[in-house]
Image 1 (cartoon, rainbow, N blue to C red):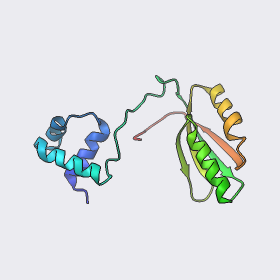
Image 2: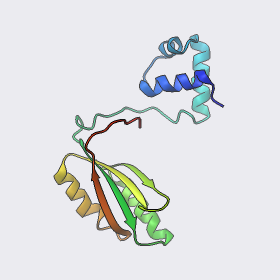
Image 3: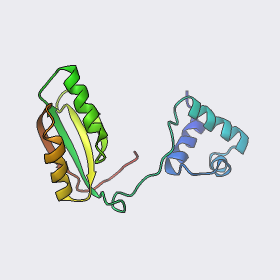
Image 4: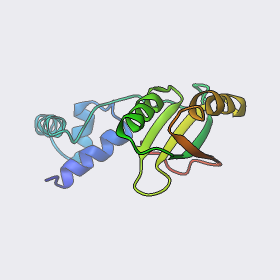
Length: 147
């Protein structure tokens, strides 16, 4: 079970994963040794799954973001697994979720521009054997992105 201090540690690490243990301890009201023990415990328990850099999509040349709803037209396990493996391997795909109900999948795609998305859609996604329907939803504005 997570207590209030654990939640506060997670909040601060989510904001800045590069905080030193000393700075983190100061922010959550602990001395460094117990703070470090809590962080290690959270890591070992899998609550903290890792640390990574947050990349600015515009600076990386991938500011054009599209959420794609995909319905598949097959139900055999092998074709579904091949579809999932193939789509997950695409560099343009930054998030990929299988859903209950319709649509079957949401895919978040980040590319340079409209032309790059059109190329991704026609050359990679629409040609996959499992795909029955694709609906593209262009992002107008990102309000919150914690992931």
